[in-house]
Amino acid sequence: MSKKYIEENLEKLKKQRDEQVMGGYRDNVVKTYDFLAWKVSEANKDYCNPKNYEVSEAVFGTRGEETKVRGYIKDLKKSEYITVSNSGENRKIRIKKPINF
Image 1 (spheres, rainbow, N blue to C red):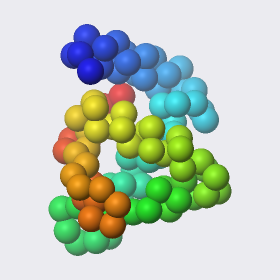
Image 2: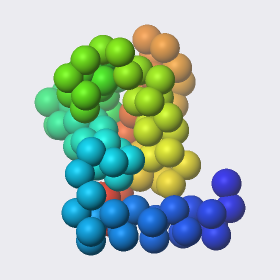
Image 3: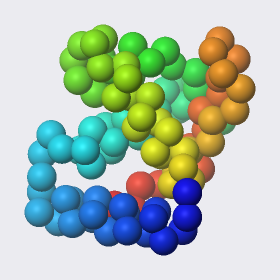
Image 4: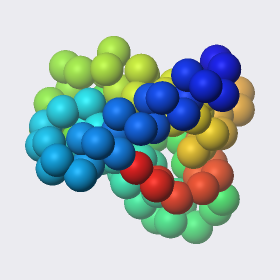
């Protein structure tokens, strides 16, 4: 993913923030990030490993949106807000920097 693409997406997200769009993509990505940050602090480690259905329940109130959650986590990783190492039971999600959009 190119820097230009990331910068353009961040500008769109900042615009959604400024216009206070609720329930949109930005809102859900921020809820995902906030849940991951909370899980990291709860774990008393520098990482967490929540199940995708847990994140879905926190963001949407249902387990049925795991596919969207996976996408949000990938986008946060590509934008360098989090790091994800390993996969499955050994997955480690770390917070890299605070949200600025």
